[in-house]
Length: 208
Image: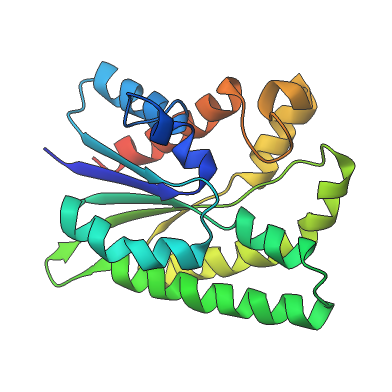
């Protein structure tokens, strides 16, 4: 049975730490249901943790990999890193320094996850996203765009699938209304989680 591990922050966590369901209540749970209903037999693991930055994820990742030894790993991380850059009175130069540190850490993440020799894992690196709702989050877009370029470049280098989300989710929000897709500009509604889960489902099953 292939093992699928989902890593991330509160968007991945989605209540799992306070729920009887270890999948949480978001895209991981929906993805698990989609795979099961289509006849795919996956062992699912959710290691999203509310508030996690990339640094915190890296600190915990070795133990998670050792415990689950996944065949497939999805990663959605970065929006809390953007929050630190934007909300801690950093100068533009300091923000750029933090972005370079983020890129170096993401490459470290990719290197650790990719495996060695015959034990190569299939990786899906998800683009962080934010909505201009409230409008103040629009000021996050330039740094988020830089972060996306870094993640896309690292994905290509390590053979991971880059999963673009920012434009797609914002287009859906423009079509259906912000409140239909996002709760607060960062976290997703049930409909938003389903969009993310369906995109991952399509990509993961295309690799089977």
